[in-house]
Amino acid sequence: MIYGSYPEVLGLSDNIKVQRYLKELVSNYLLKDILLLDNVKNSSKLFDLLSLLAYQCGSEVSNSELGRSLGMSKNTFERYLD
Image (cartoon, rainbow, N blue to C red):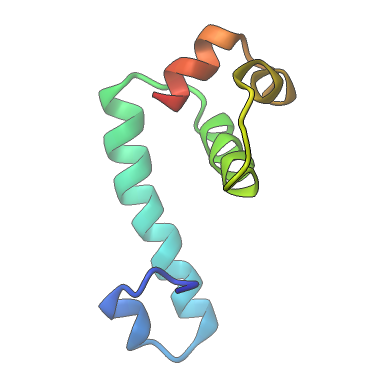
């Protein structure tokens, strides 16, 4: 569950190789597809947003509160969230 049950990850025994594979996966899909398709310019903010949302799992989320903690406007936050 921790690694998303990707077959390639399950076959790796070295934790460093697992982390490298997962970073590559994120880079290939998140950066390439999401950032380019929606013209998102600040990838670090997107990663921060995803982390904050992961910590909010199962709780109510306030767009304005999360936007403030990321240092972005409500409109920018909502566009990133979308």
